[in-house]
Image (cartoon, rainbow, N blue to C red; front, side):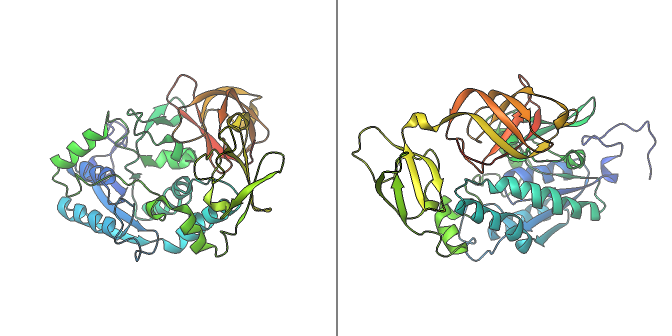
Length: 381
């Protein structure tokens, strides 16, 4: 039944009763998305759970702590059965390989340090799955991400999670405005993960004590190199370790085994001051090393920018913001200078070490919690 304009907004910000509001919940099988689904089901929403099969389960069945593996699909199904809402498994394996895994492998081979979880959110979960949710006549799609969606004067805004330790804003910067209008993040306001687990226990969910996933779902035990070797045979060709003047210091077993800023495991000890990986040159198969100070930079070229702040990105000459250039680092003060609608030069007020091509540079409102967008770092120091 249609409701009039005087109908109060429900907890998802929609002018409908929960019973008349269909919500697709993206369920990974973990505690976060399971709590979201159970919470909304208990509130009386018309919940539909959807889990994505993203890669071959053969190797993943025995692997714990990975998102969307065989056990995770089973766990999601059990939660749906316990809470009494339908649950579907969608085979996105080919789509995931084309949109995420292939680019991950190619970026690594090109000497970059990719972040496939961002691409998965951007190209699979918030694109294809979101389209499926609309096909199911859902009013919105909810996820278990720790981030907040708040209404501002010009519409929906993306804000950091209340719990800074769980905040996932770095991985969601590429969310488009039209996606943000449709998405909901019911856990973003919680003060701690302990609250989420308490809710899981309250609902009697079998996943209440399930460990958090730690690895990228298709990279067992964090061993990137072994995955790249399987995807791109011959990728681990050996080469030379050289200093910044080109002097050969030793040999390596493949560029894919190294990341910018790495110090340990270089196999070139006893040369005086510690040396760090400064640059990777896949074309010459060289790993360039140097002193720690050579890692520092203040200028960061960024492209493929997604802007969800107010106004047009290339309408401004420059803007003071805070930026995060790695998921594990806090935002730092910087100035963005747009070069086009999708490219910019970011100047850090204080130099940062280990700025790596392939990582994201995420923009935040200075002194606030709002995410303004971000882009991809595309070349080295």
